[in-house]
Image (cartoon, rainbow, N blue to C red; front, side, top):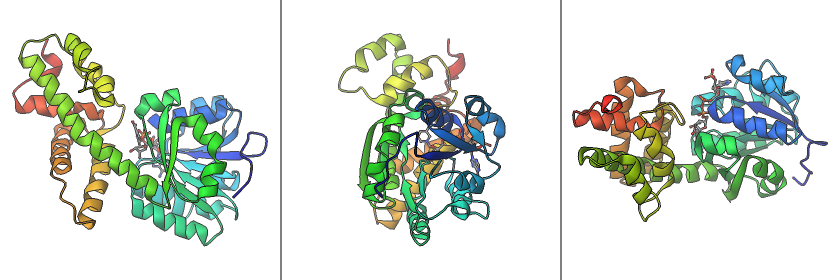
Length: 305
Ligand code: NAP
């Protein structure tokens, strides 16, 4: 693939206008591209439609109207439905089209989609992201890409409109595997963030002042800086849904098992997050791990002050 990607030549499609997709699609509109959109709940696309996006009634119809179609949906079964389903993208794509799945999904599904697309002379890339809702809003995502090298290079203007870092990690599925590495790092890190703040609280410290000291030192991390203040304020709005994180850890654990790897840290994090979901917080942000950990120690975190 050596075509030029630019607003005057390239028609874009976007499927999935939730927390992440809404901002990301907005950046492409802002860069001057014509975009056709579809999402399960149309209300979540209204703002984009008001800014000039065209609504299509199905993923298939989005693909009919687009040279490059992006998906940013929730779970692997959603990706399967919007790409491979009866009214899915492949059913509407012309040879030469490109499809880019930016959801966090199964590496094996990315490979299956790339193979089925290639048989139709369509290129499929897996391009999950890291950086959270804030990274999506600020166009500062890190994009981890698997698939055809020339297509990845040709899409550079798109990656640059959405993020500050994009790296091709290898062939189909390599983007999703890299995102799993990212999630393994985040999972155990979140236990540390929450336990450290619990410790500071029980020791009678001013947690905002504690953050001032530790966030800029060797213990600093994106999770601590981004979620620490929200945890202290008792604001557990998503962000990144607990149920999506459970999905990611499930994929990472399944892939680890397949590779014969023991991952005790990841398994512990997954079990703790199961408790978070069982306590009714599945649609809260991942930092609500604090609620479950505080509960174990008999602390009612939101009402502690
Ligand atoms: P979200 O708010 O649930 O957005 C997903 C959107 O896709 C929703 O609007 C949903 O419709 C729509 N959708 C789902 N299945 C669909 C289908 N079959 N057909 C059409 N539309 C469909 O989730 P998100 O936070 O944006 O996350 C999206 C993906 O990015 C997930 O895979 C997540 O793991 C990953 N991710 C999220 C973050 C984060 O911080 N939020 C960071 C990195 C990666 P409804 O509105 O009807 O539910």
